[in-house]
Length: 294
Image (cartoon, rainbow, N blue to C red; front, side, top):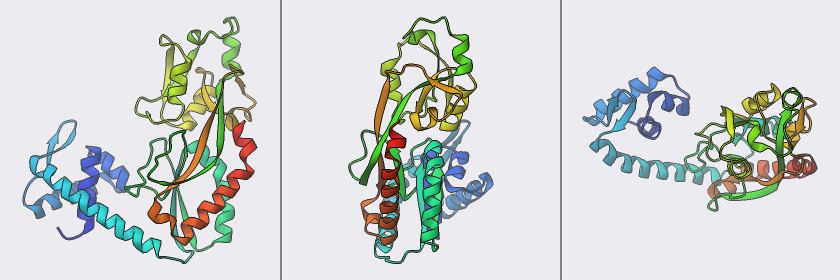
């Protein structure tokens, strides 16, 4: 094994179980992962994966190697965080993870921040799947949750209001439904793989078990599009739903408030540039508090 990259490719395949999943995580193409994995096994002198029709499974030797690789990875990240924690210059790249709908409202703040700090670059990771800050998939996360992870540095930056919305087009076809007939409506929900969304449990508690979920999505933009085009009803943040003239609240008395947090590793928090962006975003969201609460 010649360098850290060999272990990065091994760990990515081990965690995803597929070459395509590892390629997306590492932001490389499929053939690069295959080539690096084959080279890694040749260097080690034994197979670390069994190639199965539905993916890659660790061999016995691969499982033993995984434990050592994870230890090395943690040490690498610890050293990387240490070096960044002692960096007092306002330069470098900051990766911010959030959802696609929240990304749209933070872009003005990102633009203003970069004008003030021209030597800092920002990467926005807008994905419904939660990133792992411990594994450095991002530096900072903006999350909407009432249960933030306690081991991270966190700043509560407000509350986000949400309600059940439908398009006027959809409501015109369901005008004869009795009031509060949740089971009669066609619902739009999250894909089964999106289990961490803050609204999932709220919706499950609100609608009856025999309700038909006619459409499932895996992104906020897809959810908004499905509701806007009259497929069914679904949960949206009020700053989205109330500002779209095509949409109406279906149950005006059903309204939720969920906390919003800025999260990052405690090790990175001591870094000047991370403190700078955290403080800037916290102040920016305070200005937007009424807008976000709905």
